[in-house]
Image 1: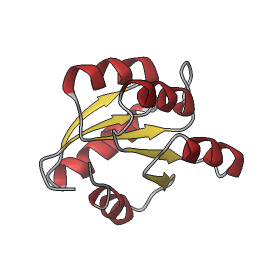
Image 2: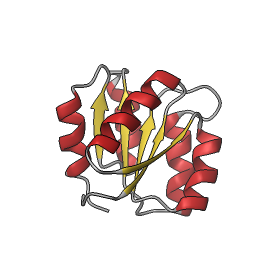
Image 3: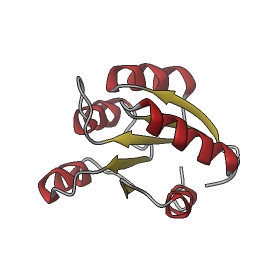
Image 4: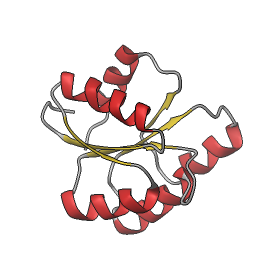
Length: 121
C-alpha cells in the first residue's frame, strides 16, 4: 500500500484508536477513526478509504457484523481485523467474508506497519 493512503481505524477503545492513528501517521498514512461499527459505516460512505482496520469485538455492531455490512456495500474494500480474540470460529467467520489480514492484540508496531503496507487496495 502506497504512502498517503487513507485508513479508517475502528475500535471501541480510545487508547487503541489513538495508538494506531499515531503509528500509521508516522508511516505516512492518512487516518480517520471511528469508535463503533455504525460510525465506521457512515465514515466509509463519506471518505471512501483505501483500507479499514476493524476491531473484532465491539459493543453494538460487532466487527463481523460491521464487516458483513461493509461487504454488502463495498465488496472489494480491503479490511484487516484487529483482535485479541484467538477463537478460530470467529476468525473462520470473518475469513468467509473476505478479510485481507489479521493483527492480534497486543500487536508489534513493526508487524502492524508491515501488514498494512502489504495490503493493496
